[in-house]
Length: 349
Ligand code: UDP
Ligand code: MG
Image 1 (cartoon, protein in one colour):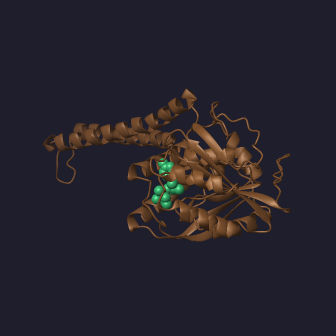
Image 2 (cartoon, rainbow, N blue to C red; image 1 turned 60 degrees about the horizontal axis):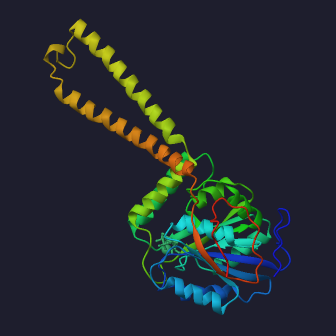
Image 3 (cartoon, rainbow, N blue to C red; image 1 turned 180 degrees about the vertical axis):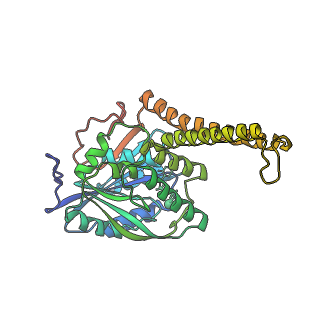
């Protein structure tokens, strides 16, 4: 199978190699179905060869064994076993760094991203687009999750300097040169869909309906989802820092104006709305203001803390993930990559 990586030109016209990266965390209920669908939809095409790269993100159920069996039965399958659960974004990163395709798709293991859409993405890739991302038209989720997602993407767009496409997740197809660019980014805490927008190149969305999970339960707890959202905002934008500065300026200006007003009122002794300055008991106002200002201060410290925490994470220089083993896809050339995110001890059997 000839994956050509010479220069920055993916092989879009001749028989190409398409890789599909599938991050899996405790997906024993669904992963067999996923494998069958992927092979059925993408496995027997004349226009391209298929490589499926499963990333076992430290699963504690039967997922690891099932994936191992796939690799034994089908030489198009490779499995990367991470040494523990590193999270969805780290798992995708691992998959992207190991995939050898001329174009690489990223898809959820739970069939919420229909494999058929990858065919449409490949069409757009052949049209010359480097990044083809799925845009969710409908979501079969509760109203709370839907509106939270919607609010988040709009907030992110307002804050980030780059154009982050609305309602697009990690489901995407990337040309080899986009993958190489992503792989070469040094940051450890990764919000893949943001970085994907950041690299630029020719990008386009493909709309699709997002069904509910085929089987199993969501691996994202509310807390994990919140972390992901915060990673998105704080890794793509420094605007919150400017905003708290602005808030401080506004609060100071307001209190200066209030101070001058109060002083003049005291000196002049004029009645306003029938009240003389001497008759105003100020306790409630003072206490409320105290709460307001200390609230603003705590939030500001929190925002600064988020950035400092991220600086700390990055300076530690630990890799995004550690893989303990890579298996399968023997016939595929191992990409020669120099990756900060990859462990030395990795071996391939
Ligand atoms: N996932 C992962 N590591 C994690 C959490 C999730 O690799 O720590 C994978 C999971 O197996 C699935 C994808 O990320 O393939 C999306 O997760 P999920 O379907 O639970 O998220 P949701 O669709 O509910 O947002
Ligand atoms: Mg899902």
